[in-house]
Image 1 (cartoon, rainbow, N blue to C red):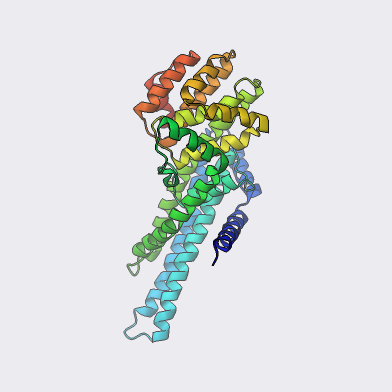
Image 2 (cartoon, rainbow, N blue to C red; image 1 turned 45 degrees about the horizontal axis):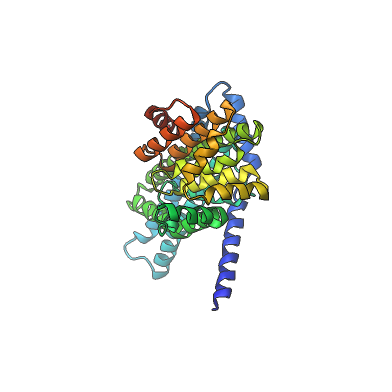
Length: 371
């Protein structure tokens, strides 16, 4: 097969897969579920409301896990007879495989819907028409946390010269390539892992229902916890962007450079950071002229020195505070761990913007995201 044909086929497969994932997402139902818990439990903080939605989803997948375990038990009973017919054995094994596959598919679908619901609770709904959002939802539902180093960018060494090349790559094509590359490399492994873990947990005859219920409960709770992190990062970033853009043109063009500088100050690029960058980029709706101005900043010999020069010219104290808050969020979100290099970068930005800053500010943001 020619390279052109392979590229066409790969594109069609990705398009079909994306369409299939989108078909599993029901934005209206998610908004309705979020509104329902908000009305029923007025006054509860968003974290508590999200926890309620996680418990609901966990119950659904737990019941499915128990049912799947029951189906596996029934199939095992056929095999367990003293001398099963060859056809019975084949049918039983096929039945077990089908039950586990249906279980994983159902659980993943419930977990994707859970992400939509939690996004609504935090007032940052996901949009299934946005390809970046769809990839993010699917990855999170599979339990791919997104803080791992982005393997597609391992060839970029963070010297001053290489940073410009990387930033250009990130703007032009890196967002979707990162998502697609992660799906290609990891998603299949994650599905196989879920199936193998389910198989192990359901291998003991008579305990399949209990183990199936426990396994799905655990996985859904983990996914829900990570969905809260994603929603908090998203909500915090969107709120800051809205305030900066509403306050005038002054700080708008510095949003993306600020995210990149603070997020990569530890000389690491994570999928989590790329998702944050992509969501901010989509939210800004920049004109060609504005994009060119941002590119001029990004293409400078030293991003930090150039960005610092622009930040010093900002007059609005509100915009200064919002940009610095965005930098803290980017640093905290990139790996959800404290890193001395990011702390040092934030200290320098704080001095430039005349903002009070201490190590505790970064640690508190990390703790809030992980809560």
